Image (cartoon, rainbow, N blue to C red; front, top):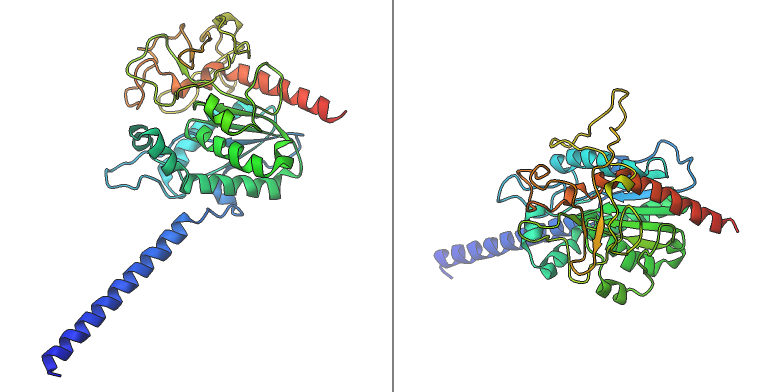
Length: 348
């Protein structure tokens, strides 16, 4: 064999080895990337209570707080992503604190998908994306919470938007596989995403709320004005709705005067405070009416122009980011009522 031919053969072999190494590195990188976050580390929790002295827990999943800063960024962020973490703190303050008089709040960080990317997808493609890494983290975090923190206490599930989408996986998969855990669920506040007739038909172990104090149920609504710009991408066909003032599914208008109170978020994510440093308790802001045909909650007392954020991925009149803040104190009162009902039945 000539020297030139030998060199060519060696070059081919070296190239093949390099390709093999690259493939193996990519494989192990993807394997590690798809592996769930380590939830034994406190740094991977947005909220862990200092003491669990209340009889009920709250497991909370924040909405989409990750946004690509560059078109080349990944569709799903890493768990250390600074923007996701800092924004999660802000939205936790607006939403999860509604439950802080009700239970011990646990909230994991989880890798999540970019908002604009998700909303631009078909529902099928969006579900395929979210059933990968985000669902893996959420299931792992909840399983870790149940086995290491819960200690057999009843619990509330609470989420918003992408967080509520993740709760649907917990409810349909984890609760089905762990009926003993499901028995301890007071209620699931799956707000800001659709719970449909089809979903419930596929998961007969689950049920939607019918009143203010039923337990073991799912609570859901998506808020918008009577007229909106474009469509509401989180509203799916057959979406079920409960009124967060009356806590019924009837289409009667509940006036703003019957709303126990709202809070006012600023565009920077902070919340308006009174002089004593507590949340400003705003009365007579938001009314509520179930629109069964549209599968939405109609709020007619809030001006869409005034309450539209310039950089929002939602059109004017879609009050998605205010699902909690408009009905903040009503959610708190309702969670308290459901907990009281659950504990009274549990003690018998």
